[in-house]
Length: 460
Image 1 (tube, rainbow, N blue to C red):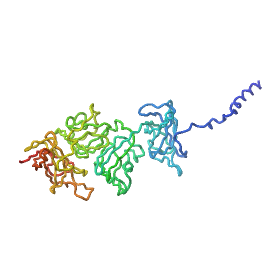
Image 2: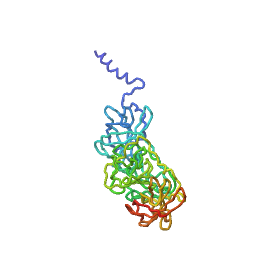
Image 3: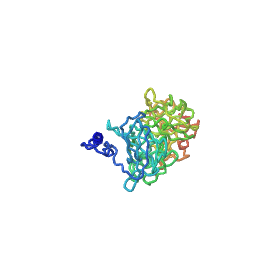
Image 4: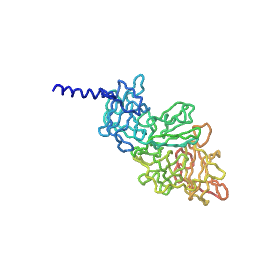
């Protein structure tokens, strides 16, 4: 009996003495990790990952999760277990390791070992502290996404722009939105920046050459005015915006808004689709783009081209709208009015954008038979061309430009300055002076973001 018991005791000894085996299970090597460089410190915050998805689809076990700072420093990793979840230790910074500091938010990367692909991901805290803290514990869900690239073409001078993606967290300094300085650093920094001025609808601004930034963050639902020295293409990457992130709040009066859709939407007088919030445009007084083209639904007028991503727009509403969305795409792709393709204005050349303008609609002509392709021009008292537009369907809309305060030269009208209109006939190449009567609005005195509805009289 003693001999049999001794034999059973020898079995485990023989097993652990075989080549390749160890008597310490913990010494077995871990699978090679994709996310490396994590420094284990005495400071840590544990995350229990309960849900892991990619584009709203559940992820199977085996994917690797890397928890990182917004600057992209991976500070904790774990292998996903779809049955029970995964606990990840996220380490804090010390003198040699620039990892997490107290109060920093979490970001994530995902690694698909089967296909050898890395994905960016958002971390949502369900329970516990939302930010890293020493000895902290939080329950989180992580949503991976495919990144999308957005390119925005800037022309020299003034532009009205927006984006319709959520940029990577490397562009953020605070939770509300990306940092303006980081977002525009691709144009250079300081005095070497191609960006001259960045302005919000409330007049806050960023001037790289002066190293001054008064803009807390880039609000993705807003449009912004950018003045650049040379043409430039901005490139940003990020994820698509969720439905909730598409909600725009319009305050009473003027708003500079982002265009948040990937598809274009027409804004012609047949339906004003781009601004047809809940199929109604009664709250919209006027909308316009960076070139001064505008739409006035109450007068059934628009000379606007289709709205498109990358551009920002100005909208004046008669009452606050707290939940405004762009409509679904059109069944037929928007078409451009033939007048939008015309570049001939007789002896005149389209004046440059100065960053501010007034919308003028000549709603009726008397003393002349208006013909499509004719033109109406606005001049200052010193005979400077400050506005130009084509005639179409018996009416004409033109932007009258104010003076650009960013330049030393006089390149537009000052507030309250009067202007006059002239009419060019394409058929005879004749120019006539227009006498006006005000139907509505500010008449023929310049008001920034003002608008006038005029009756035009041409005397033989």
